[in-house]
Image (spheres, rainbow, N blue to C red):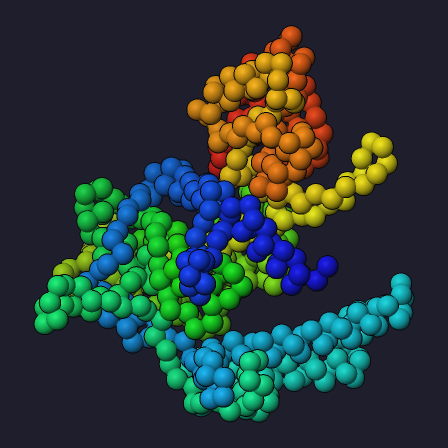
Length: 518
Ligand code: GAP
């Protein structure tokens, strides 16, 4: 099945099983805004807990805060967001649709890559085992032609983006003959910069009101509290401040489900360091953050680093951790060496001294900052996309059956176990309830007695419940139950008394945390 089809199925599955709903759906929805359902919110909370514990619990020198979404508007002037937090946009005059100019070009480049992949695939079929892909790519005339076209356009786009050259971006679109996907025409406007911040008015009267912004990143709430935390927590460099919270961006191209949203959540940590040490800390946090992802066991080959060519206005080094989504490798987390830009800017705009007295160096300075910034929703999507599996099962009698199983890492699965009486009589529901009433203090449990046991297993597979506990007639006699494992579907009989220990061992976030470098 094509990756695109899998992704469509995943979106349908996420809705059908209470993970993610379109916002305001009964009013035909609100573009690029989503709600999390009963299973989605559990998974999201577990991801946040895993991150918070890895950052705050495991590091004596990292503390958390929760700053407000509304902040003084000068903060966004100081941070550069009012002047520079822009995307280049272009409108098609016929369809009246608006696009990001760089995304139109990237889509064009993707089509060239697809053409090359098709040539390779055709040749691989033709030559069979004797096929040498590397040689074919280096020598086949059609592939070389496509590759040259790709390299030229990519280089032009990178240069134009680096130089904020809007005319050149438009020229590339025209030269490549890129048409509007809706109208099919090349009737393009000029390329203009579009600021991504949402704004609103604060205050009750027209004269007394003030324009405020919905924060486009949580990081600025950390910077403006640097002094508060450093002083009240008596923090010594190097130290970090972590925060989880909502951010808002008026994205021009909002697509790929919850990958690019207008309202989303970030988990950010600003790590304050001595000037001159920031690039070492940058490498350190790259390693630590990659290990955090890999500990989930979704496959190390699914991650890669992408070094930024065009650095943001505040950075002197930046890399993304990319995850292999069904639509290719894409950024899930950014690690940025932000220099002392933000604190210096706030010092200048607020007129307050924002410095650290370093007893070792016997001097005061504005600390440098390494930032780790991950989108909760994007992380959620990576887990969901990786988990979605369609399987054909051969049953004992030789017939086959289909199942959709969400292979969500057990430690962050929304429901940890389901307790299922084999039949709805003979005292089995009572026994199952008694087990649930004991385990519910430790784990998110579900009780289900409706339909055949097979159908109940399928329902739990579909939401990624790692363990099903089946209570049968033997349970009444010897206080044992069967555990059925989601991934292998193997079953094991165990004493009820040891359930807490067995399940804790398998679903604890502690197991993940223990794998992390500090
Ligand atoms: N404070 C730095 C910062 O905000 P960013 O690379 O713009 O950096 C960090 O964003 C992370 O936030 C991204 O890696 C991504 O996971 C998430 N993110 C950014 N924009 C998003 C959007 N429109 N929808 C969902 N997640 C987004």
